[in-house]
Amino acid sequence: MRWYSLVAIYFVLWWLVLFAVLPFRVKSFEEMGDVTLGTDRGAPHRPNLASKIAVTSVIAAILLAIVYVTFDIYGLTMVDFIV
Image (cartoon, rainbow, N blue to C red):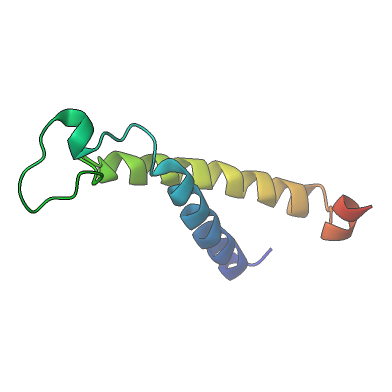
């Protein structure tokens, strides 16, 4: 697999994992009891984006390693998964 293919796959995996990780451990302003004028009740109180980005990067790297091993080391193709 070429390096730019790995970068493209990592990019797609990273975004998919980010959208899966974003809702974890989020409390809204309403749940925290800290609703002020001009804020949305359902907005995250503390989104902790730095830790979510770090977790997303690690999970995407693990998934990329699995994809690399599956297709490059074992030589499987997408056709092998269809049948």
